[in-house]
Length: 262
Ligand SMILES: Nc1ncnc2c1ncn2[C@@H]1O[C@H](COP(=O)(O)OP(=O)(O)OP(=O)(O)O)[C@@H](O)[C@H]1O
Image 1: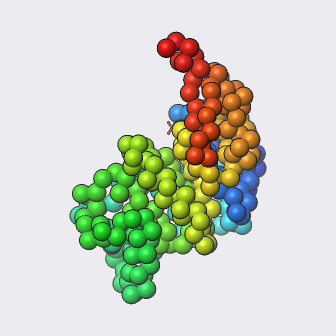
Image 2: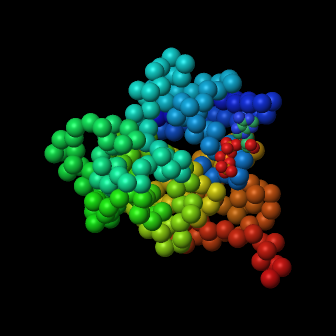
């Protein structure tokens, strides 16, 4: 699905990404875990074609960057991000926002067919938002907005679906609800390949088969999530001892230094 070889990104004399090798195969779902400034957004911008590498080879869905028409490729990549959320119009109805996903447009300007409306309603139901379909987007809570944006992204039947820190700003209940929906979508037939970017280990759901640990612009480690999210690996990643608890098939961490001081 994605093949990145020896990717380097340098901007304003700063090496933002260094020697990244990363492959995503069909059937895998990946999380990218990294601290602030580790290069996660830059990596996503490369995959989406918003940014060009300084050097290296990037191939997405069989298309080699530099030899393909990026806007066409982008139609196959869904993105759930804070900046996308900010672009939605407050006065638009939830149903038309979801329908606009079919055309990847901000606003609905094209005629829709009955089957489009039925599909949009199916996704709203899947994300427990049916009751909101006639509401204005502007009145929704953060959690509801994120769920509506996921339904919108699914309308385009993307092959890759990117979640860029989707739980930011959510309280624990809204966060857990959103995560449950993401886990549920992963069991749908023809589910897209997920890439889930986060600062928080506990958001890495069981459906994320693989994890990439990004540190200071470099791949610290990558592989099956269970092998990545161990106490020794995460302690080395964070440069400080952490304790790890596995509960509900997810990994939860605490800094050991903090525990000792209490
Ligand atoms: N155009 C640029 N010129 C110089 N430095 C940049 C540029 N764009 C990003 N950076 C720097 O590169 C580093 C990585 O930025 P990036 O936004 O990719 O990190 P991130 O992992 O997404 O961070 P966060 O989790 O805080 O959103 C940061 O130190 C940032 O300041």
